[in-house]
Image (cartoon, rainbow, N blue to C red; front, side, top):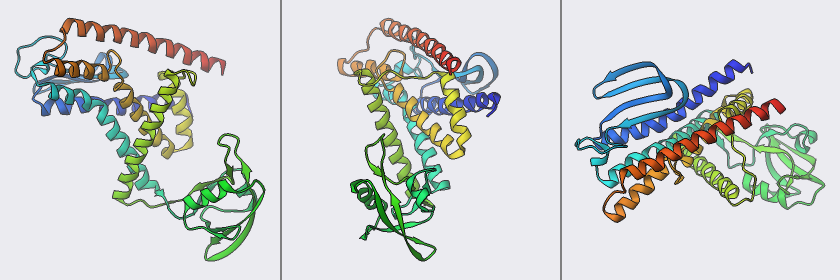
Length: 340
């Protein structure tokens, strides 16, 4: 894929994910009666702006962030519509709404993918055979329904997977139904080195997803990705795996690879990225939403806020460190691309 298109697609993806994050803050602020002074997408010089009511809407030059600036968010204010004049639970709601919208966006994207491309079928129907693997070599085709393995009846995809994993490595007779005909196919199963499981090289089939079913799978996928990211972060923090993060340059490289594979993988990538952004923002790190939620929780317990100047200093320091980290990650991404 041409580099210019990779850059354009990356910018669009970042804009969508960040827009939904800031939209969460914006909608919650309006619902709680807080004045939003500026709602912008991007950072740096203003390319376009329009004032509507009390809010200035703007599009800025660098698509690497966004903001929802509220009255009294980082300074003292006696204004009845200021952020700091609201109750703790209202401020917590406003802060949490940004990451929450990222999870909502991910769920909607996953649900849309299932609506268009189908949901995993419970039947033991083959969706695709992996190139060069045992099933393809033996002659199993996409659309075949596995009805028995070595004479043992198969009722579902889950049951087929369990039986295959328990098989000894070697030749196995798969009975499949193909266009109302029943065929016996000998397949040489193999142990996958990555998982350690016995496999034949097939992917689960899909069926057209109904609305509610697609929503259910959208929620499940959001949960699965959230859990996977949390586990990965925990392993990195505890030293079980090496720290491996990517900045805008690294992300553009990933977008190029995923986009080349088609629209479906690209949509799933956007959903996963949205989950990632929402989850990272909930971490109790300075300058992130999670840190603000910690300060608000402490205020709720103490019954009075922490000194605004001290809190502001913590967030400012965290923001500077975050910028430094992004520069370092981008530098490392560029070196990785140069070295291939």
